[in-house]
Amino acid sequence: MGFQKTALVALRESLNGFSTNEEWLSHIYKAQIQNQWFEEKQIHLALNNWLEALSDTNINQWLSAYELPSEVHNLRLGVIMAGNIPLVGLHDLIIGVLTGYKLVAKMSTDDEVLPKFWLKKASEIDPIWNNQIEYSDNFKNLDAAIATGSNNSSRYFEYYFRNIPHILRKNRNSVAVLTGTESEDELIAFGHDVFDFYGLGCRNVTKVYLPAGYAFKTLFDVWEKHHAEVAFHNKYVNNYNYHKALLLMNLDPHIDAGYILMKERSELYSPVGMLNYEFYSNIDHLVDVIESMQENIQCVVSIDQRISDLTLGQSQCPKLNDYADGIDTMQWALNSIKI
Image 1 (cartoon, rainbow, N blue to C red):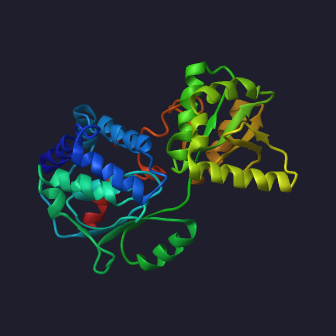
Image 2 (image 1 turned 180 degrees about the vertical axis):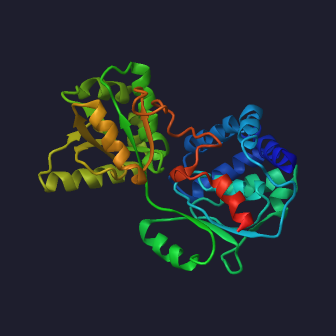
Image 3 (image 1 turned 45 degrees about the horizontal axis):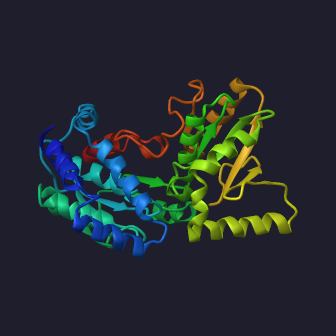
């Protein structure tokens, strides 16, 4: 595994004790000031998810699946990173370093405090995190590129990177399928799929499929106890109130739980403060429906393994080999070395 294992261990070790380390706490506070969506609780969630992902077992399993280079090379990989949730773009950057590239990274202004600080801390243990990464808006003379943005910006990226290998990440959403037999703990877990990071991530559930005749009261009673505090966040509640006003002015039927709006419609995307739902009567047909929309879906959660092996509560806990858009980014980066 060569330098890759050492580099990942450095990332993990530099993260240990973040919740009590004064330097870490100072930068967590700075990240909150920079982006008001990044509450301390949400940042801690993201960092703890990374600690879990970077266990020795997970590192070994991930790296052992690939034929990795024994040393770094001179090829340049540009990475344009998202900033919708804390540290969301770091996975692409890490893969670039592990596959030996010189990284040219453009971080989102919404999320640059924590990634830069974490990589600086890691470079004190393993200099590769400093030597192989430069922060720049200059994407000339690249050999490959990964860019994350909107569906509109992807058209620009497609043209700009047309002559080199590239991965372009567009808008995707995640869905859940409930069976009506979920326990209270499973409904609590489902709430994390919806409410963690205030629903801003592509792995947040924005559409739920429900069995015909589903009783909402059980779900709302559980969420009221465990997730309704989202309504105390200023930005979240502003979104909730805005979309509630639109629904009321348009006399558009909906369910108002007091902290989230439920709207019956077929679209996958729902804005912050709202969750789309649709009823189903045949699970086998629903499997086919979801399969037909795979290009627009990031992940699917359900306790029914016919639907997904990702159960409720796991959408925001990606493993190292859970690749965005279903593209094996590590293998793509390795293949691009040979082109």
